[in-house]
Length: 425
Image (cartoon, rainbow, N blue to C red):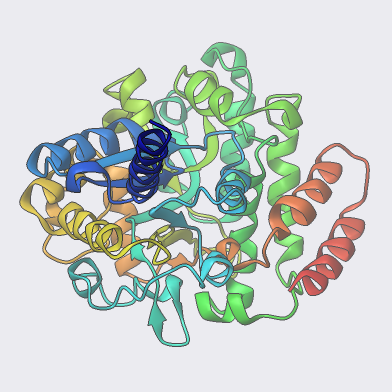
């Protein structure tokens, strides 16, 4: 009897060990199902990405994809870092630029042989390429500058097309402000002084020309001179004077979804990624009211916006082979399949960063303008994505907030910002 009990115990132990081994080897899922995780920061297209994933799972029943979306006022950078720190790394995640690529380089695979890399428009892989190796698939092309409500401009008697210099822009702002009550406005601007990424993007108008509008030069720069700091101060003082207050409390949602979409302000600093959100609030807003104005930095009469690939999908190579191969397959399907291309244009409303798309089908006028300005060389680069790791959130942003609040002078802001840039590089 004792021998039978020992034998039964041994058999049960072996069974549990085998079961345990099988249960811990489930990165590729049970019953040969591959399970992937995606870390997304584009909250404005979260629903569209979920729909894309559902379609892929329908066509590939042996694949399960879990989506995590963090952004829109949440600290996505820290959230992603926390996942890596807690050994919960996603299979696919978004990279903001070369600093992110360097940060996660040990995890990232070379994407050069992927179909979605081979079909990327010339130059669009540069923002994720280190030492000649591309580590990311461009999400799309995005552009940003002053986004305006053309309807309010026209009601105030200001033709947006007539603004051709910095001084023209100042006069337009003053004209609209003088008619605030008649126009039912709370203020002219709703700059989101609470959002570090909005401040970071704003700064790029003035740092991109310092780096000769080159992503590589921006990434390799050892110092920041703020050559165009005086123009940055002029724009900053202008929007702060005519902004909804308190500016430091103004978040993305209040600025874009409440005040701008609600017709309470005429100008915000944002990009074409807000179009799906605007459409969900007022389906005629983007098509009838939305416009974009450039900034005049290098030249007082030749304006530019910032545009180009802003985010890149990185694939985690520190996973089992089946997961890596399925991650690559999903990315290729998303950007090269007929279904993926149709959804990228019609639902995501992206400006494509890949060949094979019908750019005449770009859904809205602002996105068309951004694409045309990019093709015509009337754009700067996303220099802010190449800042030293942590610079914009822990150094640039707090000092800029102090200036907005009147706590320091502009000279103080420039001195501390330059010093921190060199230290953090």
